[in-house]
Length: 382
Image (tube, rainbow, N blue to C red):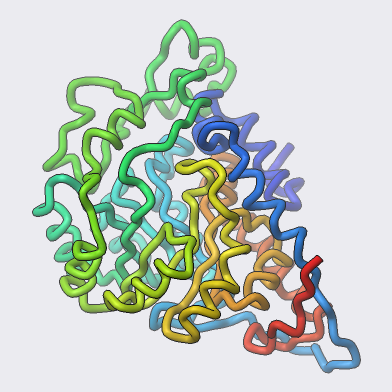
């Protein structure tokens, strides 16, 4: 299979599985406990139908929308995901450049393998930095200063990770950071020579934004769950979120909320947007699907926040359903990580091209000329 033979996200997933050693593929693909939430994130979209309107002039389609104070070419963007170097040697820079090619927003993670400054130098596209409040609070303040100096448009606080979820696939495959050859994983690494060759040429998997302050990996490989639990602060409260919003004083996103009451609190502390997310099912298994949380949140807050659906988005029709239910935009992580693993920057561009084509086609078939025309009247719940 080649990139040109990939026609949807699941095709890219299949190609990623062929390209990656098993521990790396399952790190992308896995989730917490029984992985019910991960599956439900995607399947929940099937509970909603799209109700088209016909005899509408759809000769010209406008996918563009405003998000976090900037204009993007379509109502999707790339979620923050950790350690992209695990999946391809072009790492986060390849993803950011693909986002620029499609004029959408790219999000860099605190635990990325490219630095804030490297991403700023690589792309002029709109950017958001995703932050955790770590035990080292001075490092959190430093993130604000560096992101502002590098020209990032928005700051995003992830709040659903006081400790790592129970990702059993990682235990079974022996996934550690940085990757290492073991008797358990040797056969899989040998069976994927393209990835393994780049691993031998460039074994630098350090966490670029924290390595000058946090040397968690300096003593050798460690489990990713061990790293999260050693560095993330469980004492974080709404007061800390309010402090961070004040420090940033710009478009401020809270990622990981699912309840309407929490959305109300986000308004109170000065947030600009909420990413409705359960971390791709990687934290609390049995958490609700983000698409099911849109209407309760929108009813509770009105238009006081932008709402971003993060989780389970695999098709253009998923995006249209989310917008019809009241979302401002959608974001995704796994789809572009599959694409990155499948073909680097070219793979991510292939995935974004497929999404753009689906959105243009599906919007026309829905009878809308722009995303602004999508309304609750276009959605029917089963």
